[in-house]
Length: 351
Image (cartoon, rainbow, N blue to C red):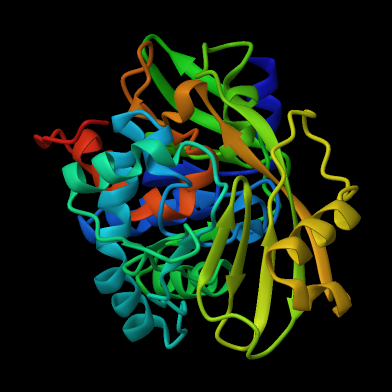
């Protein structure tokens, strides 16, 4: 109790219906859905909103590759992808910022592993595809979104709805009374109170809850990316094994990504390797110098299945995390599922 008494002297208790911890795509989309249902929502982030894995990813709205994943993963991803046309239009209308949703298709090149299951999976899930003369598979309905613009549009839309987003505000402690969290303390000494709390802290979710509470098995998986300026060189997503190339509307091409289990290390070490592999897929990139490079930390999870649920030991604590590579793809569907759980609504979702 001394910790909390000292903090109360420095800060103030700020009530809200729901406090979300984490302002990445999972946290912001959760805030959007909860606010749409009439809740007063505050979002806290240890850094800048949306600047971790949500910003760093490629924005491909399709699993890579869906027949390699459990049905729980593909069902949520496909449901999320189906919501994107209307959702991005809503965000554009409310924020004035275009998230650049583009249905550009995706070509899976010859030699990509596990394609023997592709035709069966596509038939079972009503996914269109075409076979090319060179052995490639083309999925014409695959779309993409531009992650940084999506985050900006979502944030502006939330703020116009009265959702408070507080950056550089790391949660340091949670006060528990019985089976409820009653308040939490942050790095600036402020005490925050709410009816319900939602953890959407990505790769940091388990660390946030431990050691006081058991957390889901979520761990960081580093991904490194390159960015090229290469107008008119590519008009569809290309994929070969774990490497993809994503063409943006302004002529940039994004190349990624590595899958590294190196803890919370965000150093950039694979630029040369990524450049060489990108040039193997699209030879014109061999002469192009990257204009950007970065790394992000995905929230990995067993079987790549996210946790969207009430905490088993705390009645007013919820989680929406562990989406691995598909946090952006799954975001609108995950947020709807979370809201159903928080408000006690029925759902037929597999998650």
